[in-house]
Length: 119
Image (cartoon, rainbow, N blue to C red; front, side):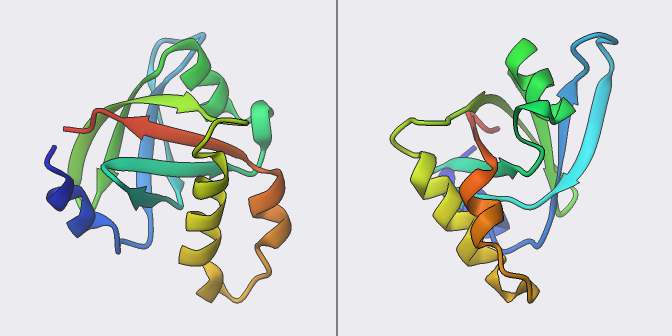
């Protein structure tokens, strides 16, 4: 997907992330906060490595994301400790700062996930 199209969806408040169940093989969808940067989507898993959707991505990185009714296909990966780990945390904390909650600890301890090859 061209970056400009993804950028046009960046202001949406929520998206829906669909992973493939690591045991069932069936699609599982969650509503989740997200951020966009340089043609990639970033997520934070508050449940860390225990979150089912994170475990599903580890088993099968193929994902679908629905933003404003538009489906995007991509490949997810956990980016803990990688170069864009701090970027993911900062982007999400800044985007959702207006939620009225202090997101500092959430952004610090959550597991960062990146989705690429969207289209």
